[in-house]
Amino acid sequence: MITRRRLGAGATAAAGLVLARPALAAFPDRPITVVVPFAPGGANDLAGRLLADRIGPLLAPEGRALVENRPGGGSAIGAEYVRRARPDGYTLLVGSASTLAVAPASGAAAARYHPTQDFTPITVVGTSPMGVVVPVNAGITTVQQLVARLRAEPGRIGYASSGVGGVSHLGADYLANLAGTSAQHVPYRGGSQTAESLIKGETLYAVDQLGSVVGQVRDGALRLLAVTTRQRDPNFPEVPTVAEAVLPEYELTTWTVMVGPKGLPDDVAEALSKAANAALAEPRVKERLESTGTTPVPDSTPASTRAFLDREFALYTNIVKRIGLKLD
Image 1 (cartoon, helix red, strand yellow):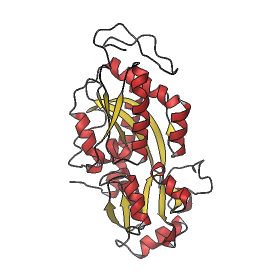
Image 2 (tube, one colour; image 1 turned 60 degrees about the vertical axis):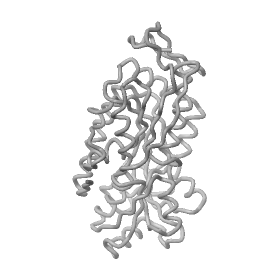
Image 3 (spheres, rainbow, N blue to C red; image 1 turned 90 degrees about the vertical axis):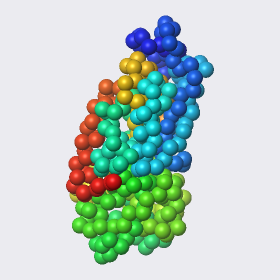
Image 4 (cartoon, rainbow, N blue to C red; image 1 turned 180 degrees about the horizontal axis):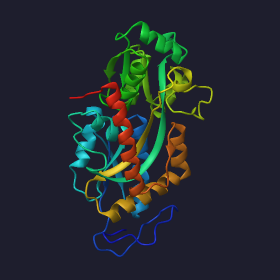
């Protein structure tokens, strides 16, 4: 177990890791709640469940952590719940760029918070490319063809997202904006519903985290036209980037970060970060995340996570301003 005193020499990443110090107020002595601000089934949900499964036992022999899904508000509702929680380490948020960058940058009513001023950064879980996807029966095989279709039918093409103010909302709007046109936003409640809407023909395209659509891409239900990073994704080396194919300025990466409420004691934040890093270094966890297009980051600290969030928030704020995304 750990206590509220300063962490000692550090923890090892062996199975059954215990972060031990002299006992004052033992942590954890009850289950930890890991809030995932999305519906079950997406990449963010998977990351939250993988971490929840391991951080409890890594903190203490009988430690437990349980996932609680709180979707809505572009993932801001779950974030707001954690922001208001007691800063004792028992309520954590596993959020994405949607949660901790896009929603607050775009002025969402449910996201009246700052990612580092109103939360305690703990660890960067991983980074993920996004992909531009369409139904396989849409008659579109390249991102150039999609852009041409958007330009030919301004404001008439529907795109799906995992929620208003989310990174998938921003990514698809940004694509249309740089193409010099517009499209209609159709929000859903999570990545799995986004993919379903495309397959059913309710919408034409989406820009979503690869981890949320990789199964449908590999099953042949969706076609991956391009990735949003500057470099091609090693899992799909034949798929071009949006920048190289059609829009040189386009670049977007999403990520998953664990934070707690503002005022979390330093030793608790450090212990949680060490446990998360140990979990992310485990082969099973690493392989599961990588299979969904997420690259684990097993060496971040609360300080480096704060710097990462501040930098990413500034980048997303600039994109939000450029496309004029405003949320009530």
